[in-house]
Image (tube, rainbow, N blue to C red; front, top):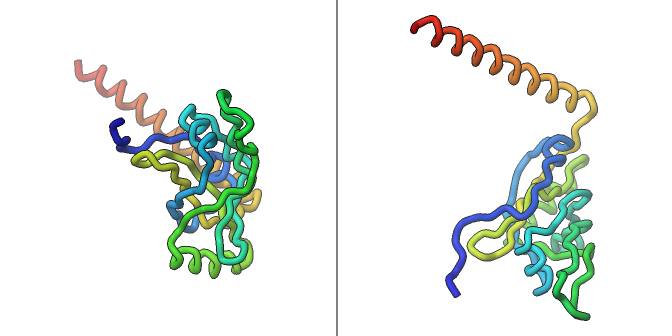
Amino acid sequence: MAKESGQKVIASNRKARHDYLILDTYEAGIALMGTEVKSLRAGRASLVDSFATVDDGEIWLRGLHIPEYSHGTWTNHEPRRTRKLLLHKKEILRLIGKTKESGTSLVPLSMYFKDGKVKVELALARGKKAHDKRQALAKRDAEREMQKVMGRAAKRGAGARR
């Protein structure tokens, strides 16, 4: 069997970028069971409401939903079990120090296959206030409106040259 190469996104947590200010990102491996990997290969996972915690010097991913494998038997996995994230010791110590600061948390941004192995993009994030979210939406709307106007002007300019 040929070895996989490249990157294939399984699931992404788009709401995390809206709700949190991303301070730093890390790529972590994840300890999975066989049926979980098979379910992920089918593209089935949900990062909604998932978060990472630090317990006894290890990083654990909680709330990640990987549905049971449809062709599995009694060896099937628990869909919302706690899964261990695999990071270098230096990264774990850095994350422990940063999460002790007030208001920071560990949030998974996306889950993907990288060269045949499942990886999780983990973010050190600080929660946004409601007014920050409104400012971000207003800024995005203003940029979208500017692009629209510039596109119309470019179309009119191209038509006038003919």
